[in-house]
Length: 147
Image 1 (spheres, rainbow, N blue to C red):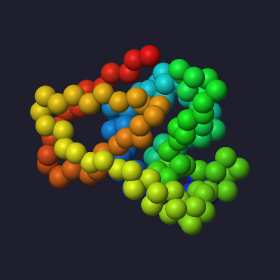
Image 2: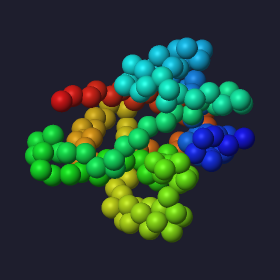
Image 3: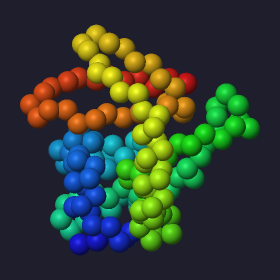
Image 4: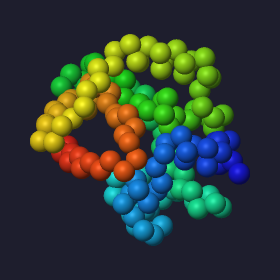
């Protein structure tokens, strides 16, 4: 089945490799919905697919004003991982995504955090994420968001 954006929900779920239960730390649909509502999403942007997949819709501009300098725009978007065109036509063209991904990886700096390590980043200026880790490996990451 395809969602409203013409994307196969199971295929997107596999790409993201996380269930709504994991993402929201929820056991019920209500708990998952409460999670997204608490984070500022609207109820009509939470769509339950017939296979039990939760599709969360969000529209972003791709750029936000720098909190320290309102005249400066910063790229702040997940285009290549979860992006869907706002007109509902699906993901951006593959050639555009490939060019974006290739250029983004040129600036990657990878390292392994060890127990007790701290990492402080400016969430508005540094794109960040993680690579997969071995099955069975456990880890605990604590995050703090400040203004």
